[in-house]
Image 1 (tube, rainbow, N blue to C red):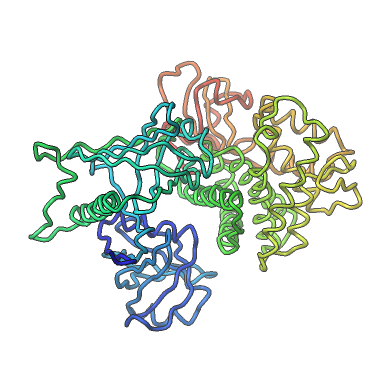
Image 2 (cartoon, rainbow, N blue to C red):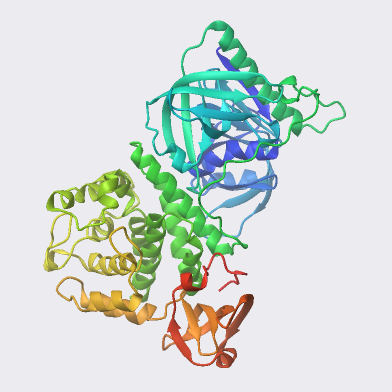
Length: 580
């Protein structure tokens, strides 16, 4: 059999599945027609299924003219060992952005992929009706999985996190059984290559590598791989002469199977529609999740993506700081570490901007704050989940997570090392020398380091941890202000003045029983605009009403901040998410 295989993918969602990793990686090459001409490094900023691609050519400004006049081009990149090349693309419009050169382009009619046979992965779809079960050990139970792709060399499975927790890289698996609608069964053996989570951190994605197969079994596996790809192409074609369906995907009676149900996660998905800023924050959260996994597996820091997301945070804060603060509440389904990183970055930049720092400094602060805790994923789980105070031996392990990220940031040439050091390496230092990684004392800790330490600890205290419940914000304020020997008192007071005791995004209760999310504050730190979602005296009736200024008077006296869980509320799960 030939060593390579090529195929064209026509289905819009299947095309997106090849392009989405290129968005996450950021970098692709742009090549004008005809094929074989010079290619240029650009960014694939977004891929909107069956609608458009967003291409950023800021790094090569000379491309603006030929793109603007409509010259056709291809995008080329590498995904899962395959060379991916789009069909010819054309520009729809140039996007309005003074700082970047971005174009909205046509969605590709197809993408061509060239693979080595051993790495050629044919993607599955639910309507193919293929089920899969994994038996990790000979005497253990079988686990229902969802097969995502299949190649001659291995496959990718989706499974519940609770089912994957006992798996480890390089572990032998007893059997993987695939059952096709025509009752063809394929049983394979091998080992676990990698384990990671999906972009939402709701499922485990497990890569398997198969053992070498006898020639007859190898031919059967390759037949299944090619039929899967053919079925995908057949479903996408709309010509008058469609391909005949593969017998693999027909029931014995010749009928089509019912779609296979997706593996359900243990997480409860957020309901309602996203607002625009929350969607952009979720993109940054996706990056942090992916970057954390990269670091765990010895990967590098994605410098260009970090730069892009830091720019986004600075820009959003400049446009509407209160809308950005409010949008943080939509991240409740993200891992706590990701929520914390984004909250620290947003508030630290907001506080620094209030004190007059320039945009270059703000960007470096945002980038450093976003990744300041990513190294913790490499620490022992028992250390992070301890329900008792850490011992001296355990505390000695903490500096490692700072060093891990600091080393990776050394390759970010655009990032100021002075600001990176102040934020990343001093966020856990304390004025009395009790912090880490170096146990610095007051005079050795920079002004930005003192500021970020205040932002970090207030956010950390107001989140639940394995060894304690979340603190009320007022108690966190008292703790920081009451320990001037540990935390910089000037920055602590500035923080309280800027964000207040009833911050944007908190749930408040009025004397009338009205419960509302705070969207804006006045000069005295009192709510000036709220989104009312419930009346505590009539909890069965959900409300959706934005009130400002005089409209607030009808709600009665403001009683204060309340805990959303007491009323079964969350910002992302409210009846409607009105924009701030």
